[in-house]
Length: 265
Image (cartoon, rainbow, N blue to C red; front, side, top):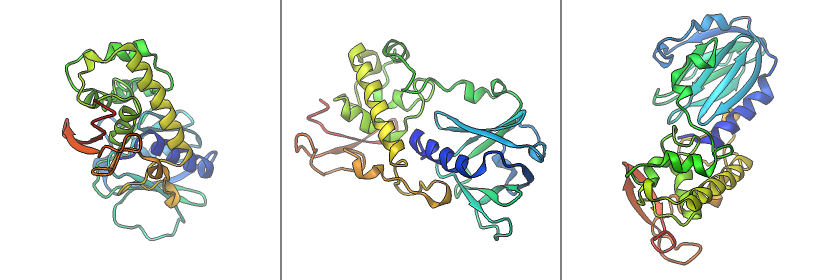
């Protein structure tokens, strides 16, 4: 699943190719991808793309007086193609500009989009918490008052936004925190460590274009390189690079959780 670094990489690539271009047509091939309560996508015709931002795992396209919000979910991708290129299987929504088309491709059809006049009108976006870049240790600690494992809590985008399974595994390893430790027992110092390591890891992942494991590919076929720097994720049975103890894999909240039993007692 694309996480914050991957989403920011997608935004960067699209931004470099699309800013100040005007939409000439919209083709909706799979309408169920559009969320209930959305404005008619035909309202985008004639609108100019002013900017592309992100919030957590959401992409936010600013068109004059409208906002298109997109969540890639598990396998969503955007590709830039020629206007007359054949429409491929799994290309579900196509935005045409004067000289090119932007195609949303999603094998599993889990991705969602909504068009609104005001971002405050989209409740799901409003539930997204602060990113590691702007949350304080006190705010994080206050959000962790739960008996649930810290691994599960950090996947909750309302607690802190942008971390998915890959980066939570990496952040907890870097912070020397056991993924099964209950949220309520996480100390203020540990909250600072989680935030600091989240920022460092996310910045490095952004620098390298995200992590390419299985299905993630950003726009124009760009693939991430951060998988070369992973310490524990997908490293089951391999020796920890810090202490040589074999990395183990357990399930926490139904998600594969990789950690070092010595470094993360």
